[in-house]
Image (cartoon, rainbow, N blue to C red; front, side, top):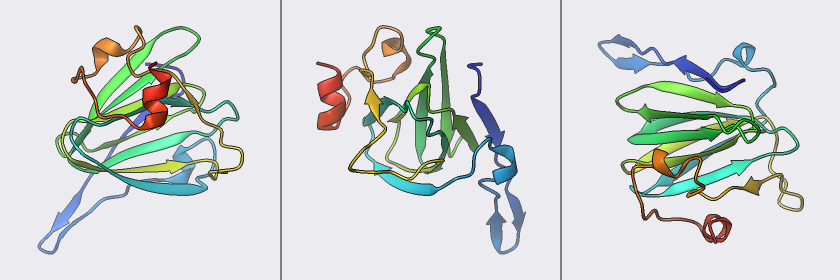
Length: 155
C-alpha cells in the first residue's frame, strides 16, 4: 500500500427503519476536514489524476454506484487502486501529495472531504495525465469522458 493511503470499512447498522452508517471520523485523519464536495459522474468519466503541493488530502466515499480509485506515488511510481461504492462500502484516505483520481464505473454519486478549502484565485491542483504509462492499465475504459483540464493534461 502506498504510504499514507488508508482504507476504512463502512459498517451499516440496520433495523426496521433502514440503516445508519458512520462515514467519517476526524480522529482517524491526520488533519481536520475543512470542506466537503459532492459530485455526480456519468459512467465512463475519469476525474484526475490530480495532486496538491500544499498538502490538501482527501477522504473519498462513493454514495451510489461504483467508482475505481487510482493513486500514484509520484516519487516511487507505486500505484494503488480499489473499486468502492455499492459493492464495496469503504472510504479511502489519500494524502494530497500523491496523484489521485477516479473512474465512474457506473453513474455515481461521489463525496470527498478535503483538508483545505478550495481557493479559486490560487488553486492547489496539479495534473498528471489519466493515460500516463504508470496508471493507464488500471482504468477499465480506454476512451474516458474528461474535463477540458484533464484532457489538456493528457495532450
